[in-house]
Image (tube, rainbow, N blue to C red; front, side):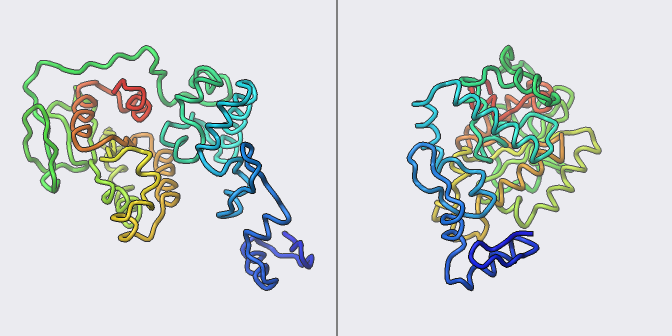
Length: 309
């Protein structure tokens, strides 16, 4: 039960309370700002209200404010704050595996790169704080850039805008994905789904159920799928500010990346990788193919961000 702070009436849900609040001629955001004031830890300004969950979980109005606060504060205080963020999310989501780079960045938690500066090695921390291993620590990983072979890259017949690779390609109907390597043993049965930003949004919105079935078919064939998006993660997290995207879609980044995190949590054989352009797509796809099982054993977005991929 929740009570209205204006008139003390009781309601069985936040939704009912929020509908009632409007009868008092006040917005829901003003209601929470007045009765439950929360301040940005850097500026002292009131936290922007989008929804109740976001409001009570936010300590800053922007990532920039967090970064400024982290830079100017005692490292131990920042480290304890980040540890608390990780533990709260672990409990809320009932997570058993460490959060991937995409999960962290898309949910407003600092990246693994940053966490390393304030809590030490992220994978060591997770191992010592109740998480089970999902990905290997990449600190000693060395990927190869080239192998001498004649294997081509297969391109699915439905791929509309094929990438250009340094090796030969061959058009072939694939059961799932847009690309695979001519030698699946070398690639560790890895299949690539290439997505433009528009395709990515469409797949996670209207095409979500179909894509889930595709992932499941891949799992039944002991294969993994890597979704490689032709835009960097920062751009994708703010696609609602891109006019050519915003005017053609009704969904927002929060909705789309909630679906991304759900897929990552539900299926062990799928990863998402956001890169800077089509040329980068082609380069990283080739590198993934020739480094066996890298998509199963390592966080690909982290490898890309730290320039190992």
